[in-house]
Length: 378
Image (cartoon, helix red, strand yellow):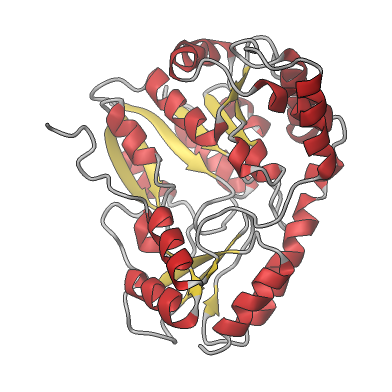
């Protein structure tokens, strides 16, 4: 049988998590917390189930949750979406992204991805029959290179996938960069898939510049976010997409057949929990503490810290520690030092190796301290 995805194997996240378990290593590879969510959120799920919210919800998601999302986006970014026609609840952000791609990308269409990029983007485009156009972010700084993006635009370009705050590099696009993107796309019909799942993890003095802030970008964007990331419940797999009504109509055509609806009691719980904005407004301070704790410990090693402006990731340059490739270093680090990390080369189609690996600091302080004790040997 001929495979539709010949280049796809087991993801690096699965490989490294399995190796971490085998070696009893501290797993700072895969991006998920090792601590619980707010007990009030769990209670809200229990209450929703007890209240009988256990059958199919409406296909786009329950209206109270969509209304809450509308209010949040308007308060934070100044753009008001229609809950009825422009917000869709999804089974996590990864499902949201593939649904957006399948909704608008036709065979032969070109889609620009900015490398290094999250590993689902390229297979999504290939499944839609599109052509992947890889444009590198600037090595070392991971800032967008707009000359290269402009050169990649052709009459066949259907969309560009933009991720800020950025996984894996932890960079955050500036207002000037978002405006440059807006100006670049203004004369085109190119759509934007804006992966903003780390929107509430941005550290001073940066702020999250959502595509929703910019009328020109908002008019052409599917904006994707994740309750799993924001509320420490990645296993719930609940997210959402905000998009103009014509794009949402196309999105829902695919959504209703690839997932149809999303977990009902979780939706009711999230709608109730969102009434208080404090949990997401206080999230930057919560994670900045962890970032700074981890960075302070890493500074005592020969690893060179790269800026972590957002997300819950810290990238480091390994050049002063080892001559191994990124992948070989991560295998050695897991087996010999007892800490798992992810090579940035895994986020490039050609395996570009710049001697940088990624740690996840979305962990209990004691987990981070345990990892730092081991990393002190470097």
